[in-house]
Length: 378
Image 1 (cartoon, one colour):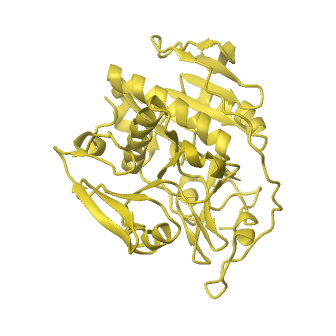
Image 2 (cartoon, one colour):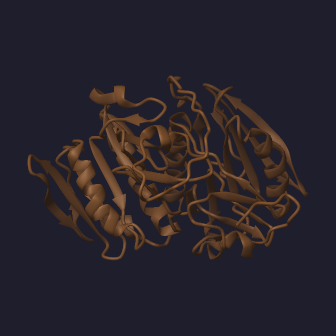
Image 3 (cartoon, helix red, strand yellow):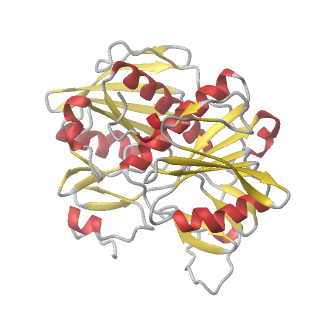
């Protein structure tokens, strides 16, 4: 589909766009979505973990993060960085979100700040989002706005070291002490690259592709990374939260989730669903991840299972990923693979009623059954 500013697109047009192109549909206009960096991911991961833990403990509803379509009208489809839907409105959570979340969080970037502060703020108010947070990485602030009538009014702007209070989640206490240290950022030239299966692409080609397209580079071939469904989000969110808590409590390193580039070679750039990097190897964390994580988790789907089980398994082993988990939502199982000289070998397959253990994360005992709950966070 060719984007023309004079055409007012609809939900039907949006649903017909290619899977490899990420847009938001705002007032009938298709707007390209840029990729995010490590700092964005770290802050978003902390907020996701904190909100999910609170919402689940209180049995309030469901928390999801991007990429996930929120369909507000026939002319408005957005992908908030983070959202909360109360259990009273759980009916809007389907293959997408069909209606206004109770709470939306947007992490600002130079490319999106003006849109988030004006166009999307107006849009969220129009469709009844009850609370909006604007997270400013540069100023290290979170602006909290609540819906009053047909528009948002500012509650407060919280700065580093202060404790955020939410009108909607009244018992939540969020201390703003989680900002990441600045990391070097490489400037990248934006050049359009045409995908041709007969061409062997490199990292240089990969980083020069337009920011509105999400790919993985596997053995020199650019492959589309499709948008995941809500259940995939539930599983990755829980894994991110549980692994982050385990790792942070023991000061073992850092846990990240997709979309985040992992550069393994000049011909291999992947975006694992979840990954762990030990503190001893923190040097590979820069604007992207430059080297093999200690642990990689892939959540299988019909569109990615063969690639995850064959090609990506081979690549992860080749470059020294120490442990690989294959999470199967259909079978409700987790395969744990450990790296040996001959490649990955199956350490164990875990099912409901069992507790997963990890060769890399000693002492971890992860209950499998709650991982696959489709009822949202309770």
